Image (cartoon, rainbow, N blue to C red):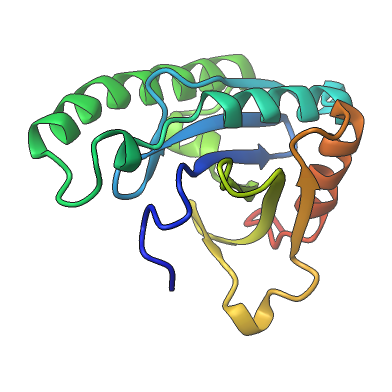
Length: 183
């Protein structure tokens, strides 16, 4: 395993698809991947989620993701800064999922996240133009990566400079090989 920060700044996003909506969520790295305080996160009706829309919004989410590990100078991460980010991130996370819940009639924010497929999106922007799309498998209300020996056919790459259409098509290809928790 490569030490955190060894490849420079890393940007993260999540792509989520349910039967009702598609969401793109910018994630910040602060010793783990968390809902971004300043990054781009949005959602749309699934029937309206074109490859172009997905590509455009996923790229924007990645470009606005922050790598606080690198910004703060690596380990140990300053606890006061982590606490300040948590204080800001939590309400924004709840507000985002509250809007999804309200629009699609879910009973609560947890229900809005269940029964979904999720793609983990990672870009080591100082090292490469290649963005890594990793399919997940659903585990109740959460998702996990596949074991390394199970990754074949579940990890895809696209250039950050690809067209919105191409970028979105790779994202959709990855969603299609997820094991969602709604089957």
